[in-house]
Length: 330
Image (tube, rainbow, N blue to C red; front, top):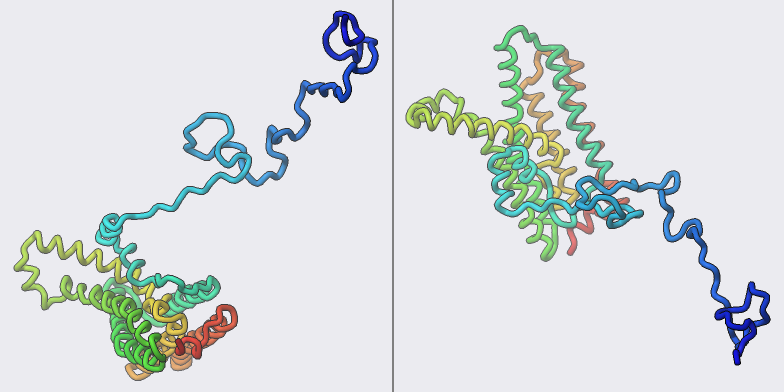
């Protein structure tokens, strides 16, 4: 005899006119919807304004279907890490890369303020634009010889800047290290080797121009023959790119003296620019310029650099906690 009402039909009696379930605790299974509920498990298309693209990233090896991170942001590609051999090859064949490695600060833990870096860059660009405007306004350029004379004059000023820096650099760094206490002094002297290497590298690059183009080196160029002249020409082109780009980086980063301490660049830049202004006044630079314009141009650079240096030191102390007292104490 059957234990539940419903005769020979198996299953729950609901819907067939039968009575209640024949056993205690019986619960009918819920009906399965033919269409999944809205939003389950993810929307078929991203909602409006969704920040990530629904399509797989370029070069994804699988066609169709969800990719890793969908519908979330795709994983960014890992940065390319060069081996030591690749770095050496790029250093030898790419003078711009070599200049970046030599003249750009790279000390671990270096404080880099984006706003200060932008102002340093604009200071350099505005200085170059002011020099070009002054040269174009007050210098008569009517032939290629005049262009060569102006370029030679500017090259001479750059060489003087390097020589002045070579004299000022050990004084500033030596005084900074001498004022330090304990192991911090040795640390600053060890860090100064990179900045000294940058100064020597720029001096060597400028000195190589004389080896290739100076009349006194004609005997050497004749002795090496055609292969030697080709090698010297390639070396000249490499040194030219290295020196031009390196000079710009040196002006912006003050010969990577931030590797010693972040407060050294503003101090060194201020002293260097005032020394160059005094030399320009003594040597009679820009003598063809009217006295008023000459005074504004010669003194405008040191005043501007001094103001920026004071503001940079203030920002380093206010926002990054770097002060001279903390720098000189271990």
